[in-house]
Amino acid sequence: MIDKNHILQPAQCENISDIRRGIDFIDRQIIEALAQRFEFVKAAAKFKISNSSVKAPERLKTMVAQRRIWAIDNKLNADIIEKMFRDLIHYFIDEELKNWQEK
Image 1 (cartoon, rainbow, N blue to C red):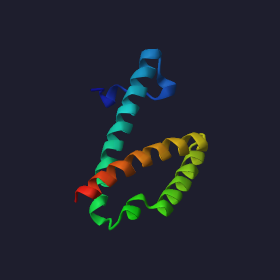
Image 2: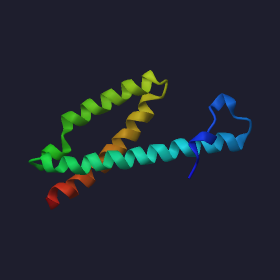
Image 3: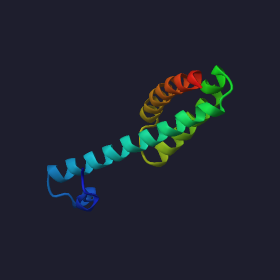
Image 4: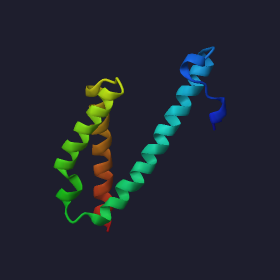
């Protein structure tokens, strides 16, 4: 595990090892956040009443639009972030469908 106290800001990094340590730390945080998000997805299954409510196409449309705005606000490529989130959301929808069908 990477010690947060040993992570430098990008401008403070003195070598490639410092950079890689920072990237690895952030990637781990992202994966942990995705795991936490997945717990919410699984919990949502108990509130869904149909297959279509699990897929929630209007919610998907709204979510993607909001994430594009967040990407732009953070100077990221909105198309890339949209694709990443669409892939992620479709994966989670498939998993939520499994949980919903089992309830």
